[in-house]
Length: 622
Figure (cartoon, rainbow, N blue to C red):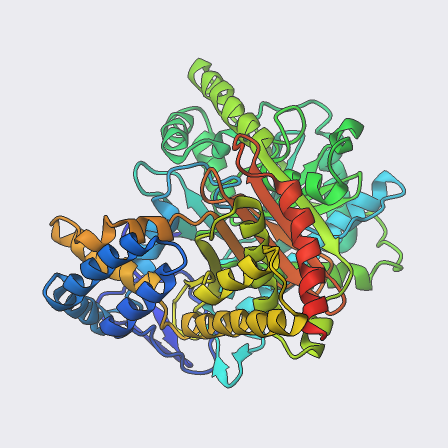
């Protein structure tokens, strides 16, 4: 059975090998216990420390007068205002929960988020291009992908996944149990998260047609020959395009929730949706993209949009169900990718799954295909019933998805001048090096300091999610100004300033990774204030808070071992997104902005970023 996990979700937390049931938590995201060592609780930072670090982060973003006023507001909040009282209540919540932030964060950042999940929330993944010489090659590839994901799921369920460590600290492994068998159900105001550990079937979508395929039976995972035959059977039965029901899932969440309710009332739709919700994952067999899709962009940039939206309703936008946590995507023109719905977990566990799948397939690349079986479980066609209201909803969703898909401007590329090894060779942190390069790039183009968000994992703590690294610092902007100034500075002077900027970023990153940064603490205090129903403290209305949380540069490192990368859109209309995969000899980048904004240009950002990386390496090599 699958469980509702949210709308004020309750969790069982696994601490070491012993299952505990704290008073406030009665249900779990997963029944699996994946932690082999005890994992501590996410701390609540010291209030004075948070306010000091908050003020420090604002220095490069505010004018002198704005900063003085913000300093006064923060001082009042800390000494005579609501700060100590809210902090005390947050400490009470810390004592009475396994993680003081997770329920709030899940609801506010994800399940309560009302914009479409595509582009805004759900990242895409683009794998290295593949070549299919004949149609059967794609069917074999799909069969091996299914087998790999099922093997991975069995490895997770059996507890054989290796405990990950950060230095000497064990990392929470529970997110690995949340990737497969998980689904986001639309709901008015706040969506619901569903999960099963017992999925035996997958959903395959082909030419907008939905099929249910049982992939595990009493004897285990279906043989490769049976899976190949089943995938071919689906392709053969999908010559006629189905109605694009899946495009409804790409609309804003309130509209989709309304349409979802209408859909449930018709025919067998309720059971069909239950099959989708309880599936292990979805596999989308996409149509080839038209040749003119690549007229203006390189393959990687076009595939990034395909992974996030399906490109358009004329191609594959209806060949999706965006509520499923994992949707793998393959097409005969050589695309392998994934879209993942962000609610249950962060990107790294998904990247580990993806690398496992590609490695499994690559190891069998030269192996002969198993003989295609004539005795295979025939996939069940799931035929939705519709009416005029649903047809109208499809038209509206199609317009929304097509506009959003057309508006996202991606520039994805492999920076091949050097990689992480070369940065380490000059004794610098690769992540901090790349982050500072992004800030110099933004400052170069926008002539102002960015409110720069970098995601930091909090997996050192049980059931924790992320913290924000406020990457922009006094030191980083001073370095950016010197890099762009016409005034002469020696390379040695530039190197000293660059190292200061990089070291400050390393300091901020270490604070975030240990739960001692700014944003989640301020978020927790804000949620306490909201729960009281009183007016928010002035701190949250002040320009310091509003400007520093309007993240016009969002970034994250998602390391894949394969030549894959993750991609997503900006979080504000006039911002940039930048996801990157630093590998030993190169760095894969996925940069984004919206075409509708005249102040941003993704191609310019990508070009300046590459030049900045080279300039910084040149400076660092002195």
